Length: 141
Length: 310
Image (tube, rainbow over all chains, first blue to last red; front, side):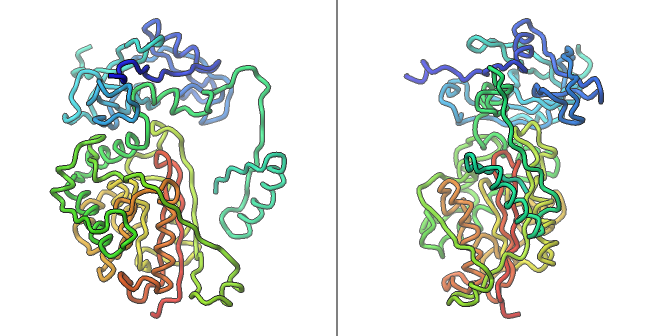
């Protein structure tokens, strides 16, 4: 099938976001934190979206979070994902505060997953490493 | 109020009078007009300036389906809304479409079971809960009240409007069960001096089944979380207690890209003029028109007022 030769669309890192992708390639999840209002920020910004400060610093995140919502993708919008369907896309509330969209790789989309605790895992996709998540039992880490 | 003005070198001057028009019409009190550029070799954000492209698409979450399914899942989890309830709304609109020969699904009847048996596309949303793209167009003319009174068609006024933009990627949404429609509708009601009880036609933007209960909640037709049950408790036909999308909505008319959303204005104007002999609401005076875009991140609400005969 021609779709097997399709490449999944990767991110196009910018000067602002490059540290995030450099970290994932080393197996680290980092998010920015504002030195003025102390809130964590994701996706990467030049300025804090809460207080407009330019003093944003990268910090390693715990990698743990809670699923806020999720979907099962049965008919992907991009044909390169067809062989993976159905797969789970979830909104994960990181312990540091920001909400991140990612995949949950160890569950089925017909399970009730909202509120479940997840931890980050890293998966290569093309020439980048994506931070994905798997559910864990509370207190099992 | 949020407005991208692109008139090339005339953009700055074009923004100034548009800001004044927005203030004079009561849409806002203060307008920030911004034009800027960077001479940095690298763009500070993704090449298309869109966080969705960098942080959503690589995870297989492209398109609106993902965002609205997230909202549906969150609504079901928080409030116990069911697929059966959402299907009831789709079927009610399909019933209305049988009186609109221009609806793409005119002549095609639907049951709740048909909706529930349709293929899962992005769970929890199924094929028949998602608008079908089609070809088409829509247009309307806005003129002064003075000029409109000289014309043959009955006058329909924009009695109130509201607009709000809250985020870009769905991960930045302030809420997953309510949207920028809520403040937009509140502003439209306030300007028009009306409330939910005064609305004779609910002309709700229905890109997905979940938008019917979410919009009903944001518009005050029921309390937050009651939208699913609300769908099963009312008659949404032109003769019903709450006529809604009497043209069949986009779920039955098809979505001709941006013209799909405009269909909700066209139907409202026709109903308020009394121009829909096959599906006319008796004495319709006020219509609430909504529109929402992208990831339920941008919303507009209009209260249109006709003469009615109350």
